[in-house]
Each structure stands twice: as C-alpha cells, then as structure tokens.
Image 1 (cartoon, rainbow, N blue to C red):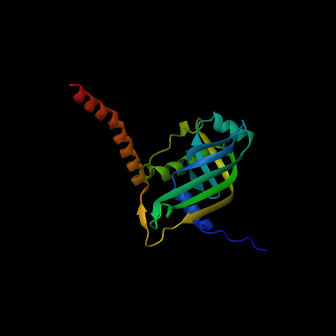
Image 2: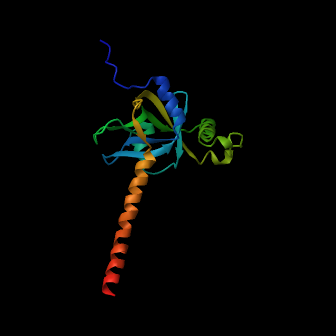
Image 3: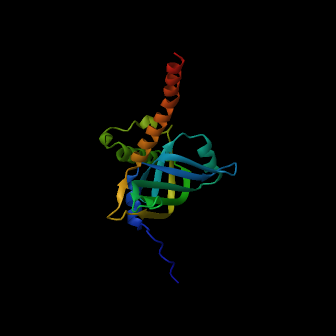
Length: 196
C-alpha cells in the first residue's frame, strides 16, 4: 500500500530549489549532554551533499564527532496571512525543507576548496571572479552533510487574503516597547509639574 501523500508537500525539485536559494539554515545534532543541539549555519548544496564551514573545534564539532546523524532545516518566510475577521483566522505563508543525513569533516583540500568556492559564489555573487586564498583552505573547517532524505512543506496564501510582512509585526512590537519605555519619563514630568 502506497503511503498517503501529506498535505502541502514540496516535490524533491522544489526542496532542492529552496536549499539553493536559502542562505542560512539550522543544523540540528544530538548533543553529548543528552540535549538537542541546534546552530545556524550558512550552507551550499552541491549535488547530493550540503557543505558549510566553521571552526574546527567547539560544541558543534564535539556533537558531530560523537554522532554524525543530523538534520538541516531551511525555510523562506512569506509573511502572515489574514483570511477572516476572527483573531485565529491567521496563518503563516512559508516554504520549509528538512534534510536528514550524516555530517562529517572534509579532509580533502580540493573538496574543501571547491565547497568554499561554491559557498562564496552562492552567498556573495559579486566575488565570483575573485581568487580563493588557497593558503587559508587547510586551516578552515569545512563540513559535508550527505543527504539521505529531503522533505519539504509549504503554505500558499489564499488569493483574497490580506498579507502582513514579518517586519510589520516586529515594527509594531518595537513601537509598543518604545512607547512603554517613555511612560516612566512622562510620569516623572507630571510628578515634577505637580510638585512645583
């Protein structure tokens, strides 16, 4: 019996396209202390592997060396959908991908250089024709996630919905915080006026 198709799934091609367009993802590992460990990383996909770079030591590397199983989560946020009068008539427009695989340090200098070049080309296209400083490659930590499984979901807003950008909500929250920060100052002025 075929597994039931989940609602709003992305195709493999759509998942790969999102990985290619997203600059940052969250790498999730099994922590050595029993707690999950997650950290944001810049990454690039090359074929069926995902590469990222970072320090050669630290908690991330310790977790990875103890258990190479990992997940990488990447997403694009399309804003917040308002589709009705009720407060609960809201949802998020998004695409998200989860890569399940195994992560390991890249030791081969040529592979490291190719991964760093691909990362630079993706994240800073203006440096595409710049030379790669090969003397830096040996001391740079480069890590490869071999992709075992790639899945993704999405939610497209309804055509008649009102959309709110992610920044709109943050701007409102910042304004409320600023207004409340001014309350003690205004109260102090009223009190001083009263005492005069």
